[in-house]
Length: 190
Image (cartoon, rainbow, N blue to C red; front, side, top):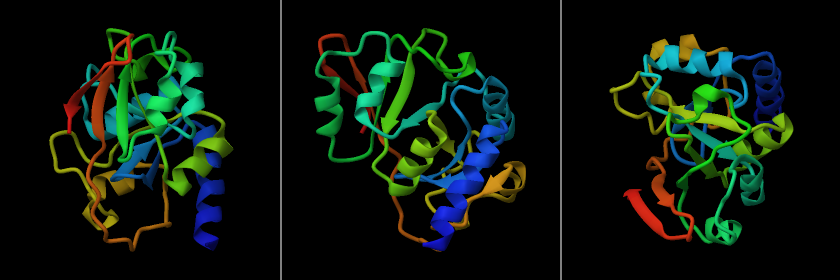
């Protein structure tokens, strides 16, 4: 587990300096940066050649952290999120505390509470939410494993995580849902 701790420390250093990382998530390989650093978020958009109108997913370490970043979540949101059995990204209205360019034009934000030990440790150590977008140029296939990540992405980030590079297991992108003020769930991407 030497890689795990060394990667966490290196990632925190890079992220605190406004850098970007290539890292394994609970779903696919992702490009990340601090979700409160507008300049770092711009770097992610530029690297992916992604239109700025397309918002990004943010990872949190714990369900209880949602109340810090969403203006008026449903009262039972923590229980709802903790009941998910698969990685699920939830779109919330009323994003607060994020860099403006992470938030959708309509004020919504897509948040996934990660169960991945590496991501959890990184977010807790950074003490900030983490941008998580697939590690590909927009429009190209999503890389499920490190070996599928293109050279432009590997060369374009400030740090490449070593941990889990040899892991060839394929995971699907997260389920995407919207939860309204009454706690009703609408599935956008199964």
